[in-house]
Length: 277
Image (cartoon, rainbow, N blue to C red; front, side):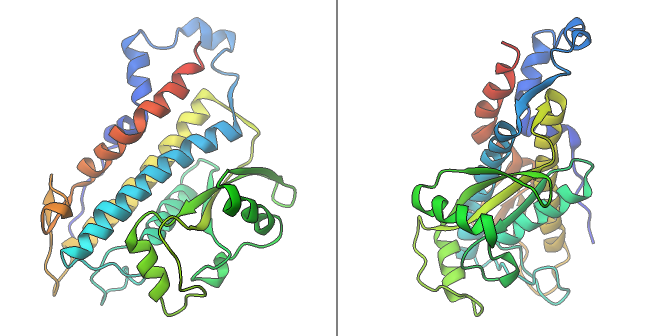
C-alpha cells in the first residue's frame, strides 16, 4: 500500500495561524511565561471545547458536502465497511468522525470525542441518562450543553449535529438498521460530545487540544487516500489540487486541510490571541 506522508508543520498551520502571528510580533515574551501569565490557566474548558467543536463542524461539513456528496455524483463509493479488504470505498461522515476520535484517543491529550443520537443507526450510540435529557434541549434550540459527569469525572460539552447535506439524509433514511427514515435537511440528527478532565486549560494545553484534533483529521483523511491507492477493481480518482465537483478528483490532504484552515483559522485566531490582551 502506498503511504501518503503526513506533514506536521502543515497540521500546525491549519488551525494555529494565530501562533504564526504571535511569532511575527516577537512571540510571547519570556518574562511573561516566567511570571506565570501564559503558564496559568487561560481558558475555561467550555471555551476550549467550543473552539474545537467549531473546527469539527467546518471540517465535517466540508468532507460531507464536498467529498462525499459531490464524490457520489462522480461514482465514488462510501461505505460503513470501507476498511474491509473486499470493500473499495471511503468512510461515511460519521465514520470519518469516528476515525478522528480514534486518533485523538491514541494521542497523549486527554480529549474525548464521540457522536450520539436518540435515533442512532448503531444502538451503542444512543444517548442515555443525563445526556438524553440534555439532548432534548439541544433539539429544541440547538444551543450547546455543558455539564460535569460525576461518574467519569469529566467536563462534558454537547453540540448539535445537523443534517447539513443531502448525503446525510439519504444515507440515514435508507440504512437497513435505521430507526428513523424521515430525516430532513436541517434536522438535529444527534450531538457531538466532547470531554476533558480539567475545568480550565493553559495556553499550551489549549494548543495541544486543537493540534490533537487537527492530527486526527489528517490521520483519517490520509487513511482514506491510502485505501484508494490500494483499489484493484474500482476506478481511482486522481488525487491532486482538484475536487469532486470538477470530476473524478480528490484533493490531497494538504489541499483538503488548507481549505479547512481558510474557513476556520480566523475565528480560532481571534480567541487564541485575545488571551494576551
